[in-house]
Image (tube, rainbow, N blue to C red; front, top):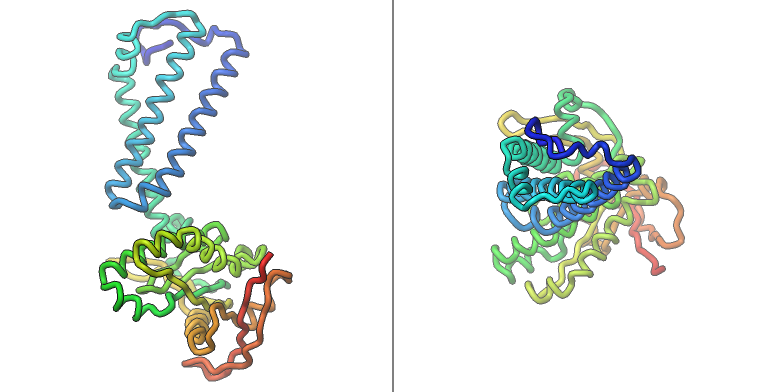
Length: 327
């Protein structure tokens, strides 16, 4: 192996092509499995449960460990195939050589910046960081979006019963479980107290009725952790939702704290529809415009709630309640 400009122990390129190909495929498979497992562990167990800075550092450390493991594995495999028995000291000398340490340091820095930019991108919504860097939101632009407002039922009563600290912990747990929205092409726009606003591009939201099944996916996620909520907080959280679609204006706002904001009547109408859930005793309400855009499904049932006056709107809006049928 060419030790980064040092003495050549052996040039492994003289190995038969078939052996070289198999070894590189095996190393690639191992790297893929290790990085894939690390990605899953990082997202599910590390970043969700510790501080931002610690999560970035640990993520970079684990990525670097995988790189070192792959390098060591490659050294062992190639030396074995070439029947060159290297002493333990030779392995360590190679791994601790100046060139290898610099390479490991490089991967650590790359891992750090990669994790940092990825989490910043998550902060703005997937893909929005790069759009901001390209200046896509510098000037307001009009587009069509689907919005859903999700709100915790009986939030005031729950907060009084649990106290502020335990209530906040429960909200944290609920919003972690709300991460399931990504599976349905949704993006969490913002959290407001115990309420969350989810948005979709029209095509993603309407495909396979993703925007509808998001709330049922979220309910399933909560149900999977029912025991946790009952044991920890003595209750099971339930949410109500309102959904509407239409034109909005997207713009980057703020100076000291910048963020992407959506403006327009579509958002206000969605919020007002969600508020009617309590009054009508419904769990999920949608506008007629949204209903008419969904794909037909034998697993969904609509109930016409009629034309309803919404706060702040002159004209009445036709609203439907939505139910999922078993199966």
